[in-house]
Image (cartoon, rainbow, N blue to C red; front, top):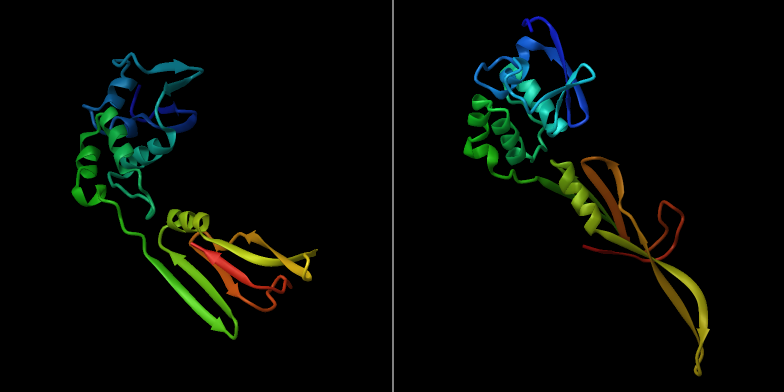
Length: 198
């Protein structure tokens, strides 16, 4: 295949089309051997070279081949898996980049909490630098609202009963969540107490 020809790869079900010269950036890599037909693990299926690997991670590898730079999203956390893929393809410059110690250490997620108290209500808004952190917090925070139910009879009197109904926190965006607690009328026109559990 000449360098200007296009090649289509099916990597784990994701389709990528690029120039042969892009794939052959590093002559000692397994990708170059794949295009030259020297690696029998890769098979041509329906005009595409099938690669039984992670297609989502291959998109970062292909971007590296195109730009010679490692540019990853700010909340990217699969460094070890990407390193494993770079080792599989024998892309030594990418492996060297991923071996840099600061990349492999987990990045702290920054969380900022805004608190506003009005009379008997408290409003919380949590902002996070990593959407996965906000997702995790959303799963751990439960807000309950009191819901009056039918009174029950006992020997001394009728006792009012309350039921606590769970309400999910609101997610205005991927990087924040909102919830409130306290007593009084809420934005959804429910009156009662709200509690939250973390």
